[in-house]
Picture 1 (tube, rainbow, N blue to C red):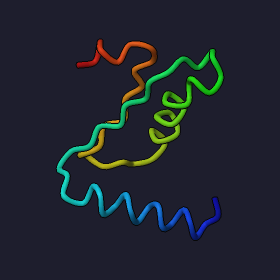
Picture 2: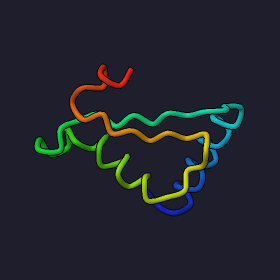
Picture 3: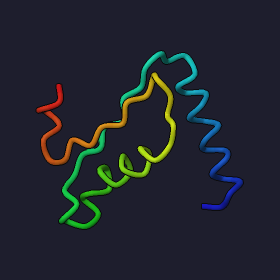
Picture 4: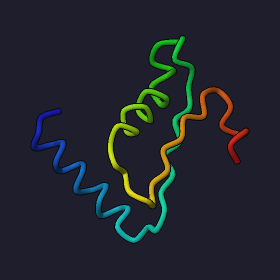
Length: 68
């Protein structure tokens, strides 16, 4: 994806979530199984940024039901 497409996708996300007070980003997966761990890796990358008070990025590993 090039930069122009990235900006378009970001703009779509901003419109989609503009009315939300809180957002939860839930990473699910097993890092030991290659691409199955992408959810956990996305949350790890997002945690490097200031996502704001209304955003929770949570790595649930293999058991997201334990976080309800």
